[in-house]
Image 1 (cartoon, rainbow, N blue to C red):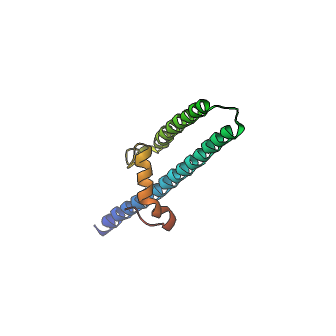
Image 2: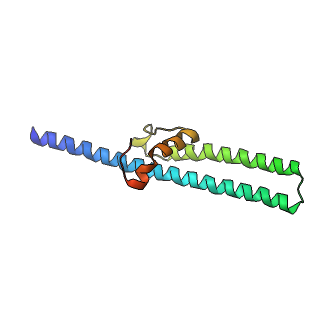
Image 3: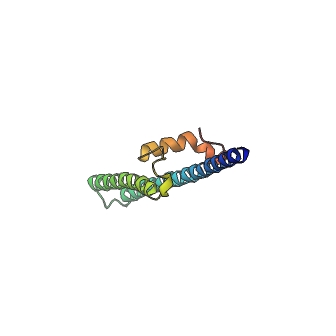
Length: 122
């Protein structure tokens, strides 16, 4: 009976450790996505500033380009989280606490200390 209990506890401990490692990697991936978005927004703003400085584009063209960039960034955010979730291993599908960009970023914000301090999930 003791051996059975020991093995059961060992299996549960290994499963818990695996889930914690998975959560850490998940949060690191979300952090990379957030940093990528920051870079894309920076490039969008740089593009807008250059368009204004060149004085070749009128304000309507700049607004159209800005709207297109905004649309593309929103599509990128939707697709990046969807593709991340699609790449989860079969046994981890359905355990994700987020389903879209805003819930993913909320999850990251709530748990980012786990990345930096190697703390357990809250």
